Image (tube, rainbow, N blue to C red):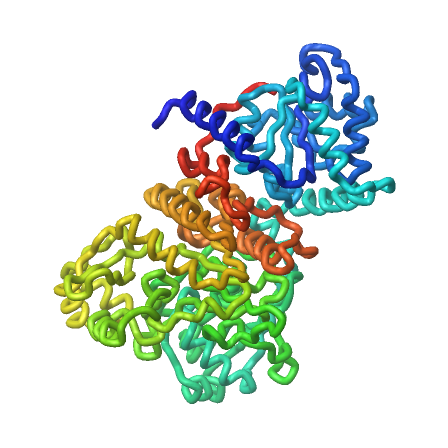
Length: 639
């Protein structure tokens, strides 16, 4: 690990480069003030303080021109608030962070709560280490030293650049946003979030009208399909009409919207025949609640599944039984295959990824406007999950037909649909999650130079006899075909340069006038999958560097939305319901008009916005810093 002084020297150098390059030129919408020796003279914890001449008038002038003020101070909250109230300034401050946390975390969280980007925020602090730490945690943040001779002129220019707001309408709007943010703080606890979601689960007995859609659900679901017994329409129909079978369709709605038909359960003579749910309700506890309602009958679980049927009591949802003729409206199924969702005539949106995007989709403002390209199970191998969101398959359109035919013949875990990627150039907005390529093993063959296949687990890449037996049993794969594959293909570590070039080819598929959003993976899982964290950090950095080369690309970090182990389910790739809600709120705000959604109430993760061409051929200095050193904390400093 490099010495902290070395990191700070680089941070200072990057800050100087940014100033010289004119990077920090975006309009300032929020000024964050330090208190001791910045807003006032003296240290509050040591005795009386005196307001620096002109500071109070400056704060009022900023607000009167639509520029907001906030505070980041390592101080006693009540004492600092009392002093600000005495000076008549507390009413001018929004999203104040006054506590004993490190300045970097204060500033990062404050900006996220205000739903702003760091380049639109100015941080004023007399301590250069505090300024550097804040810039480390909030890449792109503008900085100011109050002792700088040009400080007053700079602040006057910021106020002048705003729009006159004599009624302080903008302040009132931010006050409302602050109130909403305070209410959403209760959702840091996932159970509290679920209780506040007003989840209703409607169980429709013998739902004959849903026959087609239930067959589709049984065929397509994987993560929450507990029996993996695939049935066609006739097979589902027989269960629905069998007098010895108790069959129900499951619909879910909550305060965010109607998720539609998301589950099917069938029990014959005390044994579960079908128990399958869309993974879009993963984390709600619906599958466990339905199983409990059925009386916990005998079941032979076909692993893998993403949520156990045992656990603590569920007290956050309501079960409602409805006869078939009073069921919920026949809305589009939440498990429609790729390309079958109704697209928006005004704006075409494509989601490409795995369970992170699929689980966030129902929380979007307009989920019906999204076309999806997610994983699936082939009809002839119902236990197999084909992750066609791997970059190795997303670029398959460029393969020669002879190569495509050979790959399908040699790889028993693929079918033709895996090698039919969507046309990214036909969409106005593409949202892409590369997460599957963080965890799957890669294979190469001397017969197909430059081609990689993605499958299995990077932690267990070798396909030996024991692994063949396990894979064959788990995924319904032919062991002879797996042995033949292992003879032709061998596990490899894909070089970074290869992946970089693949990413460039993939991102170039998006039309220059369209937008590309990349959702990064988590880098800390609070004790879960610790062995994968370094890989996630490495891949995040690599992807962010490549995205910086494309003016229409932006990356969104999920880490700021994750507060503890409860924000994950069973792996570093599977989050709690609250996290999927927060991801969707951020995506909704980015997709539609690039503005925060009016429905967004939870704190959004920061975005490294790469729409503007970089001035130095790469990331702006603060973003370069994150890539160079990772997201390590700088030691907290006194205010």
